[in-house]
Length: 342
Image (cartoon, rainbow, N blue to C red; front, side, top):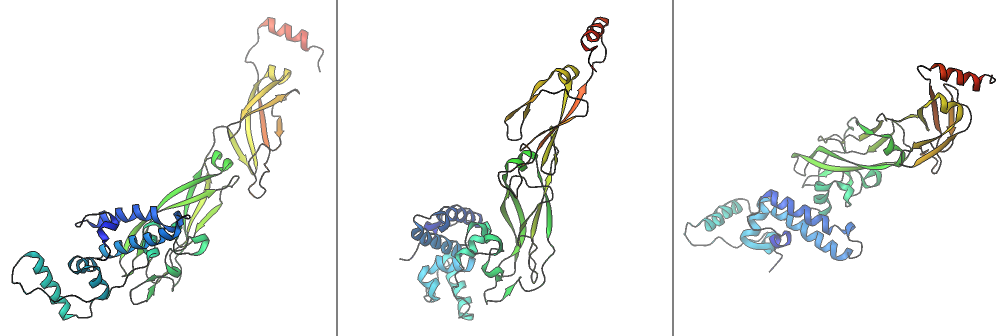
């Protein structure tokens, strides 16, 4: 007895296309060799079985031959003659209809299994391992960037390349300060081996490095829509900076506006400023602060992406709040205290 494809995918015999897709997805994620570095050999064998089972059961012709005659017949292309019985039960009718077409086209069926990595790439894109590509395994996700038709012809990859597609990637200052991984769901049109187009959904991971500036571009090669004869467009994400309630960015520096009272400006104060990574920064004011004055705190600005460990400056701009009115007593007290100060 050969392999039981239904059992391998853990689906029942009347599983629908969606059932098969769900089962394949779940099992392929568990058994992909890249996810099993320890028992890689076992995982590879299991992954191949899962792919073969999905390949056979998701193809109506392969599935019909397998259901009627089993794995041996499917792979050898040899089918037993149709049963002689004249019974009109549905199963023998299927046998006869099937054999009728087989006799007319004796060579119409040859078992041609699909590559396991190609099937995986159709579901998950090539980031999950499998076929390589440019940009650290982020290419088109198919063997050498082409979509192969059964006779070995290829479409895509030969003609001109579609214009790059740009998308804005909004980031807040905290994310650009600390760095962050963002996951973007994309949907693109691809063509299968038979020239049929379909939508493929994929998750791309974008790693924002600390200190990246507005306008930084991240390119995913050939992740745009595909059209026959045209190389898919590169997908480009462009970093944009969302406004922040407290800070403004000026190159590698961070600027913060700070309002203090006239009394604090004259007599001093310790400011507590919350940094973008959530620390409380103590900034003591000991000198007299004049309106419009600025104070520079070194190495508390934005990280400098090209020089890890280094940061720009934090610039504190002061606004001195004057009292709106003074009582006669306050005025005479101030004259007495400030009279001799020039």
